[in-house]
Length: 261
Image (cartoon, rainbow, N blue to C red; front, side, top):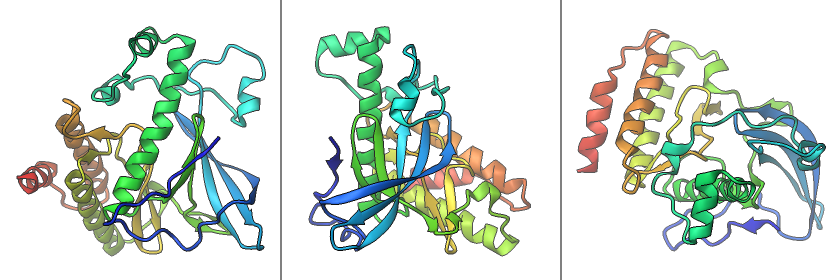
């Protein structure tokens, strides 16, 4: 059963007008992208009154598949190759000792718990950052295996990753300013992306959109938060630098820290 994300706080942005309430029918339109820990499918949601919208469903892929047909049943094409998630999980706690042991031992139960925790975690982070004013896909609902969220793109194709957007220099400069402003919003909201790169932001309608937050770190709770923030800044600064922009990652990082007070 999917959990809707429809409980905004008093200070939240209003929910998008394209949201379709129950009852509705989802039609899978095929795979948009496969990544190291998830597969993205495009779906069309049709409401009872005939209104419709395009959404994406992010399937979190099992880290180990032992039973034949498991991937097919989940609607994904291959198992996850993402392994280095320990630093991201610091600061996230399981209350039951049985659950903590299962995660530590990476038993079948532990892997299910982690998969469920990643979907709920990304949903929470997306909604928090969306409410804070950041350009992120609006999260619609989630269950233990997948997250449904806003589709960025047109009928003819999805919004390109920044890495493949082929921007002119003045557009690159605009994208850099938007990226720094976006990271500042994240940090003020208490979050670090943790895997920020030109492949985890989209360029759509002259705007930069941040995506892919399952590994996002709580800046206050995770002792790796500042290290990961610095790594994020160095990653993107290096990418922009290779495209002819003069970017000092240490200056950006220091400015972000000063902004935290």
